[in-house]
Amino acid sequence: MSPDFDPGILDGVPAEFAACLREPAFSVENATFCIWRRYGDRAWQVGPVQFLPDHLDPDGSEFLLSPLDGRPETTGRGPRTTTIAR
Image (cartoon, rainbow, N blue to C red):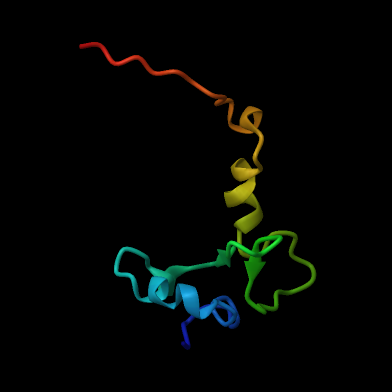
């Protein structure tokens, strides 16, 4: 796959997820980052993309994924109970 963005973003995507790269619901050509995690992986994985060393968050992934840190207090949303009136 040779997209018009940073080389390497999609290069390491495992075969198990290859169909996702062709899914019309996803605009992979507009991707700035790609992460994946298989059941047996101990951590999230990324492709071998190379960024300039002087950029702290060159693809925006740190900012965009920061609410997904596993701590409900980050988003201010803890467990909630919803009651549906009948």
